[in-house]
Length: 554
Image 1 (cartoon, rainbow, N blue to C red):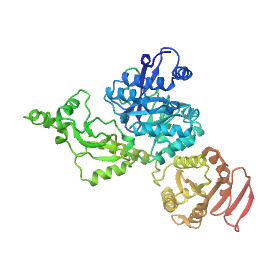
Image 2 (image 1 turned 120 degrees about the vertical axis):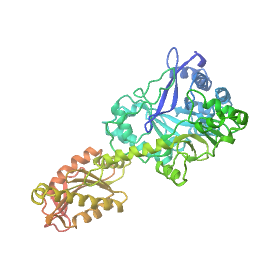
Image 3 (image 1 turned 135 degrees about the vertical axis):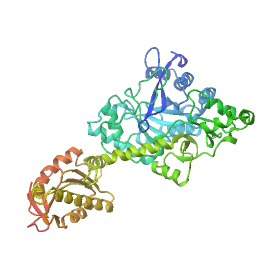
């Protein structure tokens, strides 16, 4: 069997879709004959699986020529190996000048051969050594949900097979949305792999995914990752993604031991590809000081600078590091900088985990730009009359509720005979009426935290809310006497009550609401009709001549 040392590696970058920069790269084994699964299968038959698996990781470290965080692949079966088998990998990392915190171990299928408790114990042991962990191949392998919930991981990598349905397949969209919701709630990060088309990239960015990998961005190469290239904006953003966090802007940190001398720091900062700064860390990888490149080089290259500082601790020319947790919101980060009255806005800010270990750095300027771009995109999606978002907001919430099996009500509201309103009272009065309706819906959504509102265009509005909220919504809209420049106006409200599992997609909701809206407009006065998926029964709840609940044929 071919020795792992003889296997060549290609390196494929992982990109931040927020900054467009490379945040890490993954080592991909390329045996001269056969495939990696075949190589590992043969090793398993010979009783050498862990030895060969870890040998591949060691060979990858040896062939890596960059300082970026490195992703190494491990089989889940290797989690059951004795901890002593990691000694050679730890030694190789030391020889390469890498710490375990610079390495992400991607644990991949099959998971079922190893009992879940042994797998968890193995992952906890790796985490205690300082490695960061990822679960790989989600959507393709046999990863049990219980292990997903309990595993001490930083990242979850979504298999390329899930992305093949984007952007058109609503089931694929729902799966990605559900996983994005899960990772945002748990503080982990979702990585999409296998991006092949611009449409997939646009869909992924629109769904709020922050890290991606694929041949569209950069294929695996022997030379390592390509430079940042994602300066293009997506051609279509389906809706604003989840709130940005500091971790979305993460860059690799250049670190040295806190005992480093000024000469050691100067050597790093004088290189052609020098970083903007250096972070001094202790033996647990916690930041102790921070050096800005410009200020440091001015100090050590000035008159007598070398004589004064060369062999002395770099800490004497360093600043106290500004740190923030990776889970902190981007706006919280900007408020921290402002509240601190901090003038070092060009410095690296150290991002730490929940026990204070360095994960990387962020730049104030990049966070400011990212937040500004997100706000511009969100503002561009708002209707200029009502400042309400378009239909994508309701579409996303409907898709989310369908995915998690949550009952809801979808409603379509519009103004009766709106063309007549414009022709009689004038288009300015018509615009004022639409603004008034939008303001009423905005006020309602402020009091009903689960309600979402979209202004589809013209006089049409969409609402999605909990079942117990729709009566409040209908009452506020239908009990009000609407008018346009003194001309009385009525409105129609069509509602679809969707029980868990009764509806398959937002498109189906839209299709079922259309005849309900037509029925509502046929009822005199301000009206409210209600139906359910799979039923031909339409209940007329409000309208001139109705008394309480009135049933009518659909």
